[in-house]
Amino acid sequence: MNKKFRYFAGFSILLLSILMVNSCHVKNEEGEKLAKIYCGSCHQFPVPNLLAKQVWEKSVLPYMSIYMGVESEIALIENQEPFSANLFVKPPVPLVSEEDFQKIKDYYLSEAPKKMPEQVREQAIEPLGNLFVPKPIKLTGRDLPNISCVRIDTAQKIIYAADEINLNLWTIDPKGQMEIVSNQQNAVADIDFLGKKMLISHVGKTMRLSHEKVGGVTLSDKNFTRNSTLLSGLDRLTQSKSIDLNGDGSDELLTCEFGFNIGKFSVWTKDKNGTFQEKVLTTTPGAERVIVTDWNSDKKPDILVLFAQGNERIVLYENKGLLNFEEKILMTFPPVYGSSYLDLVDFNKDGRMDLLYTCGDNADFSMVLKPYHGVYVFENQGNNKFKQNYFFPMDGAYKAQAQDFDLDGDLDIAAIGFYSNFEAKDQEDFVILENNQKTFLPKNLNITNFGRWITMDSGDIDGDGDMDIVLGNHPLSPSPGKHNAEWYKGNSVLILENKKK
Image (tube, rainbow, N blue to C red; front, side, top):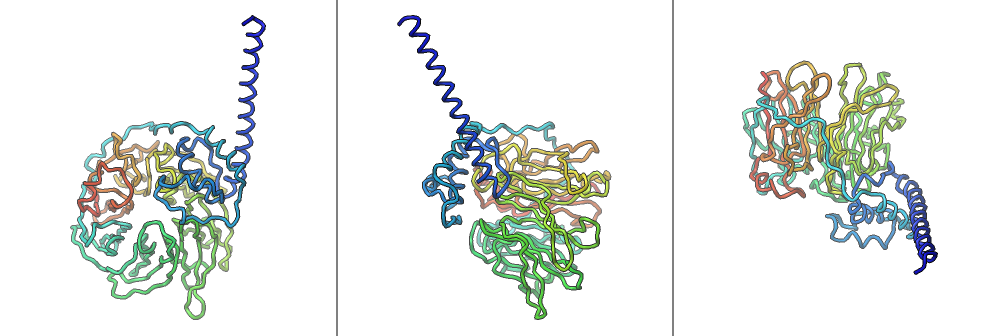
């Protein structure tokens, strides 16, 4: 081979490589543009580095193809995830062409990392010490109890614990004495105390994924001698609230129908016959947490709602009077965050409510550990603007509550992780983030062997002046096998008795 030919051949290969790179770059730019149009139209645009390439390829993109009606992709989801394609609502006609969907797919698969970065913490988790004493409670039933809700009634010094498998609602006193107060309850998602009564939100026959509209709201006295059904036929109800929104002296009902693909958030008001009439504020699914507060100090109750399931966001419904509300989106999150809980807490005592937020619901299309799961504090800057000023990485974070657990005058945070990394050296399924004025110091109690925590409440159970914690074990769910045998021993509820006083 002569020198001129070798030079020409080398130049041709270089030119071909440059053309191929440029072609891929153009193709990726086109795929990115299409992804922003189609994937960003229903929720915050998910950038490729939120998930590893294999997760995009084997799970998320095939499932998204169902929403978009791309039939050729649907077969790829078989035997990949514990969801059935018939649970999804497909559009009557494809929303995107096969060619364009392939460009979107190529964009994500070329830009996504091969593996997700590991969780990074600035501070190691330290032992909590003897602040709490664990008191396990073993509930009974025909089948293994699976706790869906725990609530502390400080007025009665009683814990309510709902078992979704045996459909029992238990009371537990500070000494561990137990009693079944109802055995006809559908799965309970939430209990709200209204003086001498309780507003109970039922998600359905079970917590499992379903399109059955069998959720409802019941009102009962605390001994369950008198109860009534207020609403029925709801779609996977996660929470309800009873509040007078229009100042007419009669309470309205707020309902979070989390659903699956289909759901809504509504206000229900009684007509002159005493029948509840529905006003739907949004038909998007995923409403899971509602908070009522006078957000703008105009003496009218406003509504904050946390939405998950794709279009993850925090929404303010500003009360304009006469049951009219102006919707304002305060924050949005990527659709893979798995938003799980929201609370209002004034951490810096400036008179403005900050957002305590967790994300970590990891049961859908991407059941892998994610470094952005955890506990967040967003500081209220005024004018409905928020700035993140704290993040604690916590795999599968599911709920967080702020209390002064150590009685030093500031607010600490207790948090649980349902989809935790149970193989981690430092257990993070339950942590106390101790406030030291400058930041929060993470501490754990190492109670993983007692249960898998899906629900938590805090309050002074025994009336001694400090804040106790109660946790609910939910073992019957897809989970790693390391601790299953321990979780199945029947420790349904764990009381963490605060020994500060």
